[in-house]
Length: 245
Image (cartoon, rainbow, N blue to C red):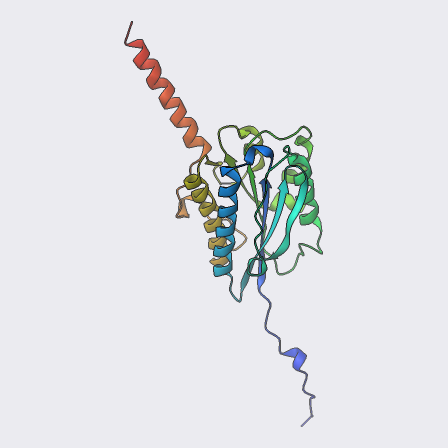
C-alpha cells in the first residue's frame, strides 16, 4: 500500500460565485435636498438586503459610480457584506457619458470582473435630468459592444425632468420597465424592484437569467404608467372643456 502524503491544500471549500451589481447614480446639483436624502436611504437599504441574501454559493458584489461635479468611483466592486455605506452629496452637472465609459472599462477588465465564477452583471442607471453633451457614443458602445452589452440593465427616472429618451435607450432590449419615482415612497418601491430582481437571481437555479417583471413582488411606478395617466387626464380635461360649448 502506497503512502500518499497528506496535503491540506487539496481540501478547500468551493468559493461562492459573484453576482456583480453596478450602480450609476446621478448626483448632479438638481439631486440636492430631498432627492439625494431619499437616494442615500434607498441604496443603504438595498445593501442591507443584499447582505442578508448572500450565502455560501452566491455573493452579491456592488460597485457605485457617481456622476455630478465629477465622475467618481464611490465604491469599488466588493461584497455587499464588506461595504460600509457613505452618504452621497449632490452638485455639478450630469456627465453621464464619462460615467458610462468608466463602467464599461470596469466590466471589460477581466482582473476586476473575471470570467470565472461570476454571473452576468446588473447595471442600474438612476438619473433626474438630461445629461451633458457627448453621451450618445458612450451609451451606444455600452449597450452594443463587448461584455457590457451582455449585462442586465435597469433604468430609473427621478422626477418629471429626467430624460426619458436617454434612459429608455439604456435599458433597450431588456424586459424591465423604465422605473419612475418622484417621491420617497416611489423611490423605495423602485429600489425594491431592483433589489428583488437581483436577490431572486441569486437564489434561482438560472442566475444568469433576469426574472420576468411579472414574477417580482414589487409595484414600482413606471414611465409608461405615468404617460398613460397624463394622457387620461388630458383626455378628461378636453372632454370636460367641450361640455361648455
